[in-house]
Amino acid sequence: MDRCIVLVDAGYLLGAAATLLAGDAARSRLSVDHTGLIQQIRERAQTETGQPLLRIYWFDGAPDRVPQPEHRRLRVMPRVTVRLGMLTRVGGRVQQKGVDAAMHAQLTELARHKAATDIVLITGDGDLLPGVMAAKEHGVAMHLWAVQAADGAYNQSEDLVAEADERQLLDRAWLTAAITAAEPASLDSAVRAAPEPSAPGAAPQASSPVRASARTPHPGDLARSTPSVALRWSSDSGWIDPDDGIPLLDTLTTAQQVWADREQDISVGGEPREVGKIFASRWVERLPPDQAADLLDRLDQIRPRIPRSLDSELLRYAARFGTIANDALDISDDHRVQLRAGFWNGIERSTEALSALAP
Image 1 (cartoon, one colour):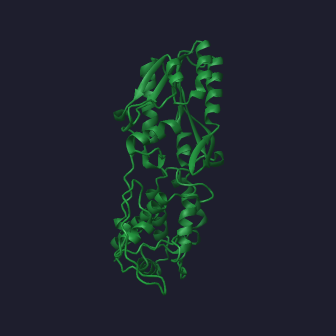
Image 2 (image 1 turned 120 degrees about the vertical axis):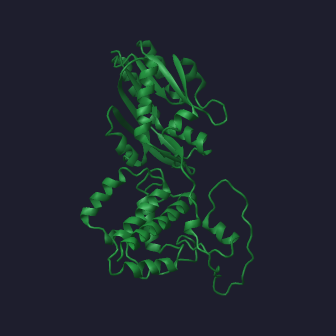
């Protein structure tokens, strides 16, 4: 058949893009327009192979192979098929399992059945070398695309590069048409100046500067380095206060709204700040009208600490997005800070909207 097929290793494509654009392989550092990215891949594949596209196979990992919001969006796009492997954490790092094996099996099966004359691979995994060699024996032209490496070095298997028939580079200009580095969460909107309280019976401690670091500062770091700022996040030991009757989103949400929320979450990219903002907006919008002003005022008085149960509910909601956490709520300090900063940003915007509607 005179047509082309594209096999995408999403872990390689987005991980390498994050390294290039954000200096960190964490995919949460990216904002991805999946519709635009798929269209770019399709157009480029057809142009470079000179063949119409049959299908794009998108291979990725997910906790327990449960499709995440981005996977649900992708699998309903025309000519896109999503194949999922496992996403696990080993030694604090996220790793894919079964993705390379699935790509190898798909590649050899497509070649054996002569499903296409040209196959494009977007991957750097040398484990696919036997599959590439077998496909060539079946008369398939193999095209290998590489993501531009951040340091100018290779980010693909040398043997895989040597075996490919054609090689192309996805450079920064091409990538940034659909993939951009997410803006780092600004904590300015989530932090309020306030006297820093000390533990009962404890003598005041002098602040100590925090060493410069590439990571987003932990709330504890900021609290120690800035005496005028009290970052009393509910996860901080010693600052777990009663919730004083602050209602949870779950108790404010009807069965009909649950279904509507799930539909909306399909289009949520999973960037921590965005997730926190959506959660907060829903919470404010569903507060009882006769209690909203009082509850928002009480929440504002303890800012930037989020009441313990509401904070836990926020983390559980964030765990639905595999790019942030897993079911064990294994959420990094960076993501927790961004989630909470997004929460307060959502509170601010929703409160302003309510004020504008007030008579």
